[in-house]
Length: 296
Image 1: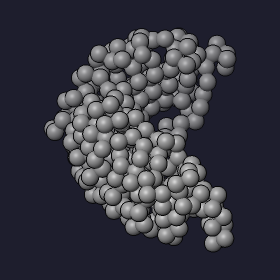
Image 2 (image 1 turned 180 degrees about the vertical axis):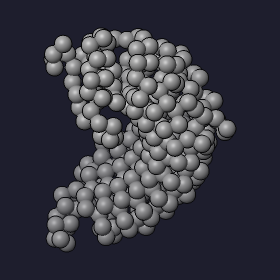
Image 3 (image 1 turned 135 degrees about the horizontal axis):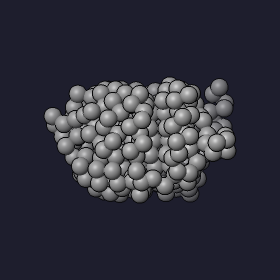
Image 4 (image 1 turned 180 degrees about the horizontal axis):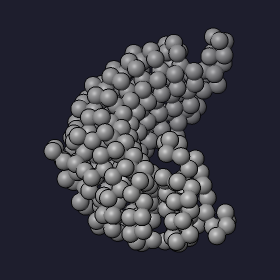
């Protein structure tokens, strides 16, 4: 086996080197894992890993990082035995998800939703007393966020959802610093977002039914805001309360109905603003850049 059969990368999560095998798993990869003391594996179809079995993972009880991106994987129950996992990503069409309650060291979790995960997120479920800090979920199946209220340790939350309508339940996530919501076409209500007093970054992408951003105006710690491809928004006026805001993006199809983009000049720390020039706007992007340059 040569280095053309695999790739080693540095983990951004502090678990050391991570192995990315090219093609199917082979005994030589197991030997490499053990000889190099590797604690991370990434298995993805983009590197020709086809799966579908994950049973070979039982050779690595000390594994700390695992990413599996392969739709043909159906059974990830073996992952429950990897009790030292700190970072886990499973983007598969699972029929048998792992028991997340068996992973006490888990800090970062990325999942494509599947049947069988409901109990883990319920009150009294596997995640209620977890140490989870970062959660990324594709296809969130609920109309609100009440099922996440048990994961009170969360600092970062990323969601995509075709069903999400409101953020009810987010007030339980008192440590939340980052919220990213993408492709949520039914989301209308940002109420209760103002309870997230520690929120530093908010990104809403392709959430095109959001018209009122009054709740965002109550986020006094907010430094970065993205409202891209979110349809018509009544006004930027609520953002004048966000004195800490440094970066703003309302590009794409997002349109400010009252046209008062000059409101941005009232934000003392704003360093950049990305938006499309429109005839209805009273300040164009280049004017904001020029005014910012003059003030530095």
